[in-house]
Amino acid sequence: MRVRINGTERDVPEAITLLHLLQERGLDPRMVVVEYNFEIIPRERYGEITLREGDNLEIVQMVAGG
Image (cartoon, rainbow, N blue to C red; front, side, top):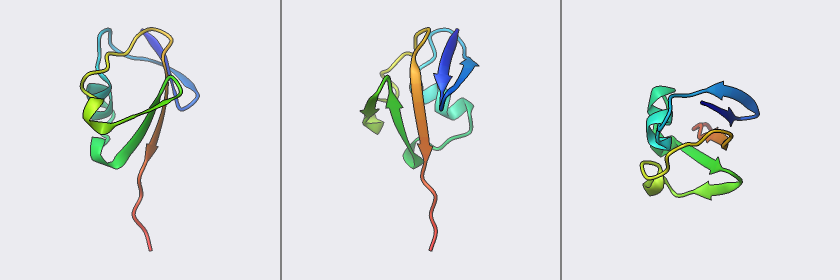
């Protein structure tokens, strides 16, 4: 199945949740903000959202610095 992640078309497994996608990509769900189909998603909902063909995701990773 194809979805758009940060502007790039990507193949992802069928019926994958947002949480599993983040984990599969090596991202800590506590350290990212996800916009799903143009809506910011609260972290506690990452496991509830199952991706579908054509979905649009923007994933922004938090970086600590000084």
